[in-house]
Length: 290
Image 1: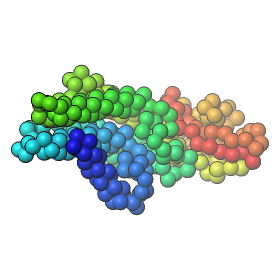
Image 2: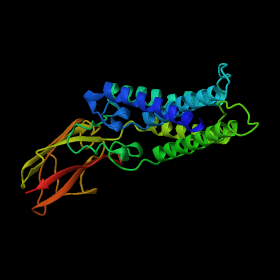
Image 3: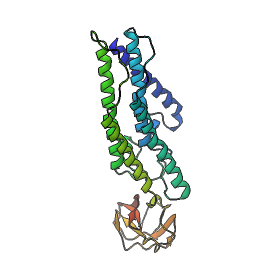
Image 4: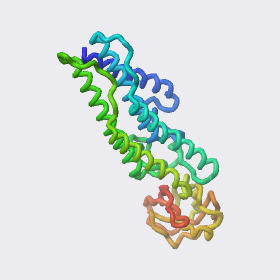
């Protein structure tokens, strides 16, 4: 009966996951699509919120049926305050991150690339701990790591309590509290993640390059945001493979577009164009020199 209680908890979670996947079929029927944000890439805040939601559901179902199999038909006692706090804490990054993204996009402070755009980072599980440019984001790593640890410890304690209930003279299984130290560490990591969101507002973003290939001196246009109204306003420079290239002399420079003739570059090579404005470096987009 003990194993059946665990199995029923897993069954409920699997059923809910299937329902969400079917409801999200238009955006991708795989499991990863459940965590996608508005940009089509997996969202870290959605992922950690889902983990805590899944753990709370699993613990409740497993404990409920374990008590039932042991002959205790009364309702479960009140849900521990620490579990409610964890659910609330996990929702804060989700809601706040969404609000910040919408505000920054609407005010033009930040342009969030989408997975459908050219040169966008791949939409894999790695995106959970990467920024919008495909680089590892340490604030996301910290938040997800402590979330995993707290979830693993909580599930372990829940399983231990259920197992103890089936032993001779065992106590009645009930929902357990979350380790206060893990609550603090998880909360701090979520605060760090949101803090980075608050200061990431003016970084230049390159969304597309047109054309995506050509031979010198073809005119190349970088489209995006945060370039500055003029090149001199922010000391703007175009970079090649992360380094400034004095041979690139833009003929057009605006807040959302930069055009320049392609300088002499090794033929049959792939380079990455980026922009530096006010000391801040943008993401990079690929261009093929024919």
